Length: 199
Image 1 (cartoon, rainbow, N blue to C red):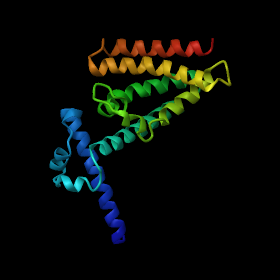
Image 2: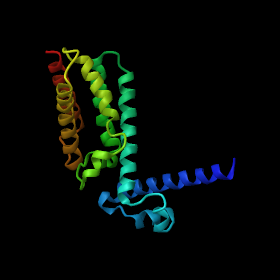
Image 3: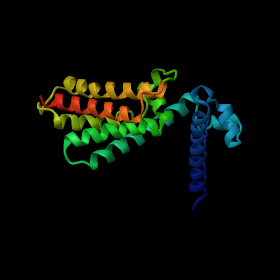
């Protein structure tokens, strides 16, 4: 391995360590506790060294959100591939979305501004559309109108998303009514919306 490759590998590892430390802080203390100084303390570097990798805290948040969207897209894609019919695919995809929200609670909060101060930069997170495109493709398969307008397709997607995201948000910010009830409400909502696509 050349010294150039070794240096690049070390830089990549330092970058990963910074992101891992940031996520560790958030999981332990919440998003409001995240600071460059705390990250530096965990990885035992000085704060100025962190600025060599990330211009500011917002750059770290953007990178973490991008990572979250990639994980979410992977989970949604895997869920789709396990099912054969579009109706089963859409249910599996939204259930995978649900599972991601609770397995990666801190990333979900950042990605969608749940219970944290969110800013305009959320709209520019890399990879933020990947999972939604997968879901929209399946919605289009289910719809009676096989050539829906972009506006109608968007409206159908947001019908699903608003119900599911709302239920997740209720459960992240306040405790919901219990896992069994939540799962049934989720499945009822998905089923009801899916049926409306074929009417």
